[in-house]
Amino acid sequence: MVTHQQEKTIWNRAHIDPFFCLIITILLVFSGLIIWSASGQDCNMMGRKIAQISMGVGVMMLMAQIPPRIYERWSPYVYFCSLVLLIIVDIFGHVSKGAQRWIDCGVMRFQPSEVAKIAVPLIVARCVNRDMCPPSIFNTIIILILIFIPTLLVAVQPDLGTAILIACSGCFVLFLSGMSWTFIVIAILIVSSCIPILWYFFMHDYQRNRIKILLSPESDPLGAGYHIIQSKIAIGSGGFPGKGWLLGTQSQLEFLPERHTDFIFSVLAEEFGFIGVIFLLLLYVLLVVRGLMIAAQAQTTFGRVIAGGMTLVFFIYVFVNIGMVSGLLPVVGVPLPMISYGGSSLVVLMAGFGIIMSIHTHRKMLSKNL
Image (cartoon, rainbow, N blue to C red; front, side):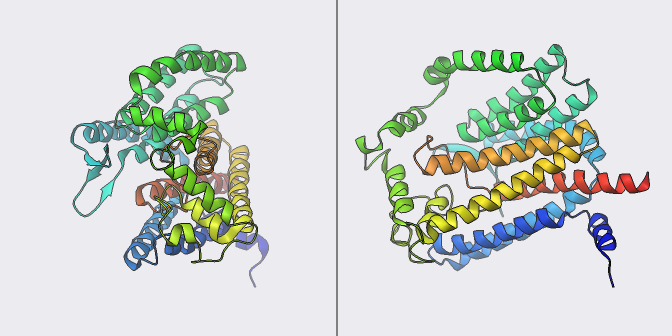
């Protein structure tokens, strides 16, 4: 008979956090149900989604086996490779829907910007771990430059939503290193003062229109405001119990655009109602809380800031997507984590979860050896 202590040891040796994996599994199963409905029962898309999930789980388990010290040691190389890939995609990348964000390898396409979501927090965590906490002003400036370079390369694709997430992934790690609130306030004021420059010189017309239409989507119901209006109708029509799986009119009759990617939350809300939304949010909250607990229990500064930073970025993913489809934030093209269709984002997200589990389980193994 296996005792509780032996069971914990088995999980630790496999470098798996059972509660973390349970929540992830439920989310992925839920994702399959929603994708099947949102795709109009498309067997080909469902097959690709299953392949994406399988690849993501495999990557997560592989990343969990690697000790955190290896991530710290290899973080400069990962960061450099991500910059090279971003430069390549900016020059030779595949163009789709007016954006140059993909590298086409023939059998598959992937977004190098997704790699940057892992590379940036890793390099920042390494810099923080090598310096005293909080980092000095000079090192903080160096870290901000390291964050700014990939952020700029992604913004010119153009992909403002992903660029903001990359910047957040690095800034959260820097924040968790103990940066003073005075510096944070000064940084916020500087960024705020640069908004007019960003608005007039860096943002494209369609990006400015998305922000303008946020205040009054009804002013252009068949143009820029169409996505938000249809999304709100889908969310509101779900009511408390929902219309039922595969019975959503906005999604099944194809009124809702991008229903299997950016606006999949609207499909969920229409078919599963308020109950389904609360269930999904509960799963997200449990995953975030567990990630922050792992960060708090980490034995090194590197482990603490990287686990905490990746968990907070995951929270921002959820917040931005739900705010976007609810009409509270501009449409920026951020998928709903683990639910939306998309291989690159899912695999990178699962890789991040693998790193978090590595930090937790290797900590326990280290304690046992000591």
